[in-house]
Structures are given as structure tokens and as C-alpha cells.
Length: 101
Image (cartoon, rainbow, N blue to C red; front, side, top):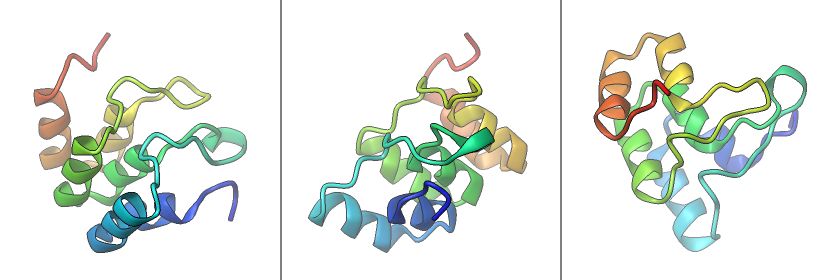
């Protein structure tokens, strides 16, 4: 749908158990690029930051979510977290690496 896979959609909604199934049982990739147009290159890890669900963000990070990977517009996961106003997710991501460079 719109270039997004099931993992993108589950992560965006903060469905942790679905994300676990997709990653652990089906080999889903937290860094799989999807989307179209202005959203081209968005990953499930990035969409998890939009959910505001810290458990989903932490899970995808722990399973390979790339802090520095950027979408086609040059936005990384921190940008997605900041745009949703989730201070918990933003603080977590900042604690994991230098995302400002």
C-alpha cells in the first residue's frame, strides 16, 4: 500500500507483537526501504518513531534499526520522532548515538 510493507504499517501503529512476528518468524528487516514520492525510502524503524510507542522503537533498534539511515529526502529516524513530538522516543534515540551529524 503506497509502497509500504506490512512491517511498516505495524510499526507505525506501534503493534509490537505483530512486529516481533514479522521480524523473528518471517525475517522482516527494520531498515527495509518503502514508500513513494515524498516518503520514498522510509523504513519500518522510522515509522515506529512516528507511533510514539517506545517498546516498538526499542525492539526495532535492538533488531538492527539503523539510526543513521536516511530516506530519499535525507530524514533519519530522529526527524520522524521529533515531528511527532514524542519526547520519550526522541530521548531514547539521542541516547543511542550522535544523530545530529
